[in-house]
Length: 458
Ligand code: BGP
Image 1: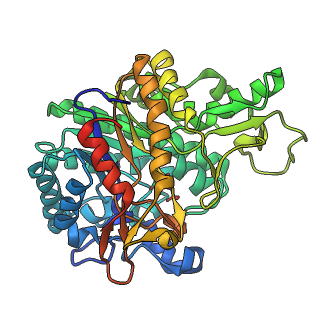
Image 2 (image 1 turned 30 degrees about the vertical axis):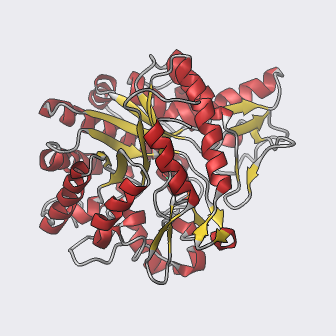
């Protein structure tokens, strides 16, 4: 049997925008997703926007009962900044305070440990209007928001995260045009990345000063980079991919500094952000207590075959080409490679190169289209998902056996949810959501997950 350590966290993650439903009875301010959908609804799969999502705002009590039914001893969600502070700062929305307190208390009452994240791609629109993460002032607003969250909920919540996947709002928002504000502006991207690392460090500082007896970390999506071959040029290409994709946030979060090679590349391309020594020392002195890691896919690269277009805006793949490995296993619905051993490589990397800091898997999962075809006797038989989890857990277990300090495994996600521009295209849940009726039904993977958690393994 694959058995995990006593007290291992089993559960799932979600985010406010993807689960609560934006148009609720309270005074939530708009975030960039609400506005983007108003401006360009056709960019969202089937034209479905963030207004309804999985109605957790209304159904949190019964949803928490469902979490119990699928074996959760822990659960991550995020606070919506613009629900708590409709303007991003200033006047607080008391309904939001009540809602989040109720949710966290209800989780505790049901012996489910809340893990709470402060930012999941959801910049308040009022702050985006003044430049969002490009503007240093927004770092101060975030700091005030974070502090308020600790004061309001820190008596219940003992595990905090400052950000979810910060590289995503950098890449998707400022390089690739997949998230609002849809800019292609490498200089802004670097500024946004740096301000995000700084904001995270300020939140950590505030949290530690309050002495609430909990821990604070950051959630990073790690995509280990693998070279096509051991040829020197391929290896160099994969080292550079690793710098941008992983070390760009891992290093400041855990070591309080940036890798010199990354700084040299940024300088070479004239992309250095505006910074002060004082702010750099905030990053240096306020590192995480523990780490959340989302793992979905690796990145495979090889040396570049052609010179980059000198007029094209800088992208990290100026230094490498993506390599399509023959025989790779794909999740065709999401277009992501399935490579379970990657989770082991991450475990060993954290152990050997990041002081074996306490960490956990905060997301791992498989989004599949049209799951209706797997329905038998009323239940969705998602055996592919169970196999996916088993394979990843087997490799994770091996990493733990070899000494990596991993304390939990959260899947993405407990209930089919709204996936940004993919809306409801791919389903990830342990529980099925009927979009017409909002009815919830446990899938086969949900039953399996309960058994996994009860037995502490499989
Ligand atoms: C992660 C995000 C989640 C979630 C998940 C699945 O990157 O933290 O918010 O959405 O990926 O990806 P997607 O929804 O794009 O299929």
